[in-house]
Length: 114
Length: 116
Image (cartoon, rainbow over all chains, first blue to last red; front, side, top):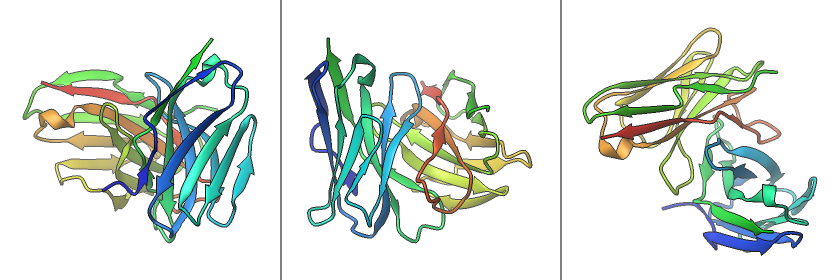
């Protein structure tokens, strides 16, 4: 089965609110976790990543939190904008991987209401 | 800087036919990975090419094959097409075949294959 999964398939928020997208993983040996954004008709776009030896990383309007105890990853988007509407995927890269293979979850559809 | 480009963007085939999809990697990237994304699903790793050799393969049958050329561009070939092969095929390039420090892959916009 999937080693990376998402708690909610859809999330609807009001413009200006903060969004939180969650992800669970099962392999504690994963080295990196990455969040991608995929807009309709486009390929996935890198948002932010986090290494397994970190518990928090911040970018521009985004924060990723990693809780290794419960094997949970979250993406927080501050002041969500209509342009943030997309499908968000978490993905993992396994420790010791000899190639850059990402394992993706199914995705969460974020809809931002004006 | 030129990003990852894929062709064709859309195509329709019938069962049993063969298809070739093409990808040009981002400038400076020597590694190309291919992913299959079925409707409503996350991308699934097919294989990766590094320095013109296959450098890892996902759970896909041998009728999925690929090539990488000296200029690092790549092809994905699928023989004996089945209905379940209908999907978005994504190409991604990266600077190195091994798990990089930044965790980034740069994806193209994909080739949408429909098998009838």
